[in-house]
Length: 95
Image 1 (tube, rainbow, N blue to C red):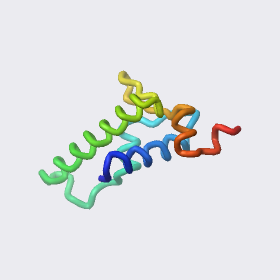
Image 2 (image 1 turned 30 degrees about the vertical axis):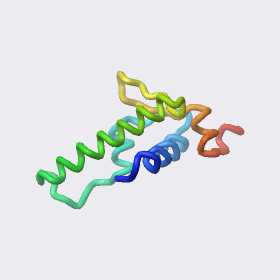
Image 3 (image 1 turned 180 degrees about the vertical axis):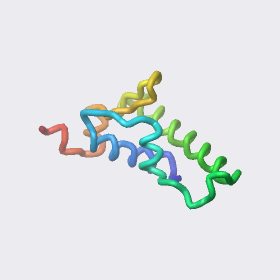
Image 4 (image 1 turned 90 degrees about the horizontal axis):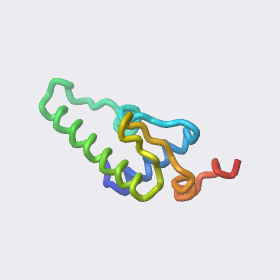
């Protein structure tokens, strides 16, 4: 996976595609980091998957703290805020 800032930009871009809806943590993970070529039973796969999930959660929490997204802690669903749309210069908020 990427650095935290690159990952944050990708998350905002993805969330802006469904600005009136939300993505679950699992959906975001699958879209940002598609299924690996490493065998799913491999220890390396499990380690990499957990590391990716932790980095993704760090990025989501950071974006939530900055007000760019709303992260529902109960359902793990995220949706972009108007501030997030403005940050990525989305034209969606003009409609």
